[in-house]
Structure formats: C-alpha cells, structure tokens
Length: 161
Image (cartoon, rainbow, N blue to C red; front, side, top):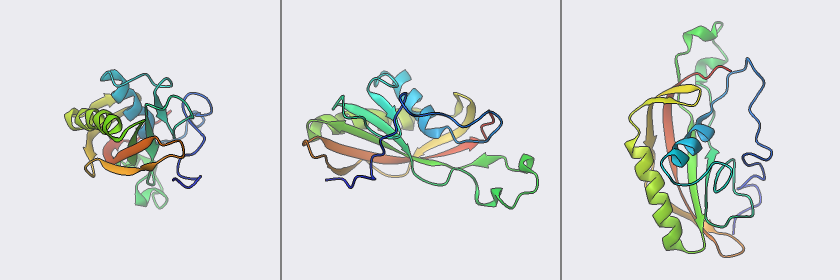
C-alpha cells in the first residue's frame, strides 16, 4: 500500500495550474506527459496525468516531478541570464489492474523516452531525455491496481513564461 503522500491529489487538468507569467518553471512533467500522448499512449487529462493519479481510470499513466527543478547555482546567480541548462527529474508511472498490463504500458512509455532525440517540447528546448532506471515495481494500491515506474532526467533550457 502507498502512503497517502505518495500520490498527491493534484492532477491535470483539474487542479494543476502553471505559475504566473514571467516566472521560471520546469515544465518537464507536463512536457513528458504530452510526449507520451503524442506517441499514442493516451490523452493528457484522460488517461495520462501530471502530478499523480485520480481515482479513475484504473489504467493510466502519471508523470510526477521528483527533484529540484533549478540548477544548484540558481540562487547564487546575480544574473539569471548566465544559467543555460537545468536538469530536472521526473517519474513516469503506469497503473493497471494487473502487473502485466502496467508493465506493458510502461515499457511503451520507456521506449518513447529512449526514442526522443532532443528538440522542442511545449515551451522548452530539450537537449535530451534519459531514463535513469529500468522499469521497476512501485507497489499495489488498496484496490489491487499495480503501479510500476521509472525516472527520467532531462537536460533542458530554462522555460520562461
């Protein structure tokens, strides 16, 4: 079983809102969700979510930001223009009624990330998306759904909105 804090109740599009205009924000989770949807793995807000899983549908993908979104020297930089890249990390999760179904969908997501060769996703330009791990079993939800995941690191330019 998962502790309550593992899957936040925030998900796209319901209560997921980007920050105010003019701020710098890593859009990695949303960009990866859109990449997975563009590869035919679902629809953002329908069965591909950002921030965690809603109660339904059981068969779904979720992308969650996992690490600090800005480079370590960001707070010490007097001029933000000198910061060229950030290296955010997110976790891609697949949930399904059986282990085999979750594993199958997660492997498709994994191959999609491996096939990304850099370029623009949404508002940012990505140099790379790299899986940091092979797919792994995360756990079983109270209702019996199986959850598997893997982490992804990006090298991307700062996103200004």
